[in-house]
Length: 501
Image (cartoon, rainbow, N blue to C red; front, top):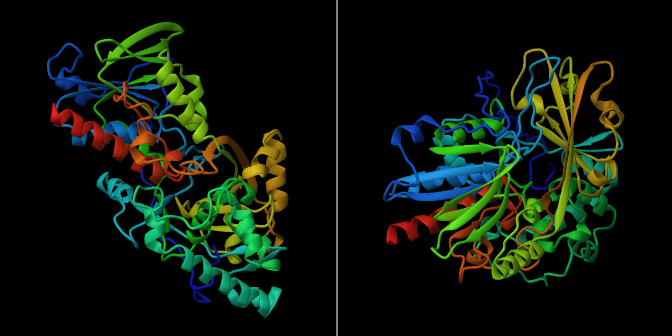
């Protein structure tokens, strides 16, 4: 995306690599268990002495990362069971393929954040540890009124010298308000004290900044990253989503062959038993100190006890759980209410006969002025195909809600209509389209309006339920990086507890 401190000609273009073979571990028959060979060879069972029995509720990125990190950190034999209500693992990370041609695209989480320019990046280290090749992603272009704006010279040409100077001033103001180190520490207990009151919205900040004709350009630029409207989030989160476009703060990348390869590798390496289509209904602590998990398998109720339970569900799925203990139920309700700031995505991804747009535009993504500001991805950069092109529209916030009720065919037509003519005629190349709706899937105020201490975020009721933990991206920044940080914290705490006994 366009940031003022980039040179006039700089573009962040990923290199192309061949498409590797992926492992399909994302589906199973109803109620099917998928124990891995590593777990079977250990002969682990709940009756064995010295076993640490852990239940993980949720088979998305958070649950799988938690299981993987636990087996690395805990020096006692583990018996881990992952309960997943659906028929697939991976949650928000999905890399399906079109039906006409076996061409992959991202249906969920679009990218990972690379914080290594600032400090350590544990998620990137994990992905590299798993041997997965990375594809850099980048783009500087904002497309407005069929004009491709890629640098400040373009801003001045189309909007005048005053708007150029305003953008430069705003960018310096943003950088002065939040440094790369502040950006990196945001969401942690070491985060700096934000100067604005938590009730002040990003819309208020933009209005006070007196950026006038620049304001719609900035709002289009950040809209799909925020997944909400500037009035629904605070200044800190708004500036984070603006400054993420500055390479001094962070960069972006995907996994060659599809982001779901991360899920495949975690599943293969986790010594856990996977219970697909076995939704957890209730969690209670017993007099013995163990935690009982009540779940359904093939429609019938079952129960199993564990030493610890980790709830790794999306925020909007928490109400599906019940807690008979009134103290825990009240704590979980407070946890839900504090973090209840839903945000939304909608993705339309289209397959074309060729990447016809590259004569005019050669980046992995840009921002469009359609749908209140949306991100347009050239998915072909992620997994280069010899003959095909793929474009993905990422709608955020109220636009995602407003269009979610449209049929898939209607949305595909809207996507084709929104493609700027300067990029070429999409209809003459169009082959197939897919739509994925992610309403309430992310958070407009990650961590809540006033973030809680890290321990309280992850253990809502420590007095009598110190072995019930929460893992979630909404506790940090609503990204895959955030859910890794959450899993890392919880597994550190559990490992320390196990090693002290």
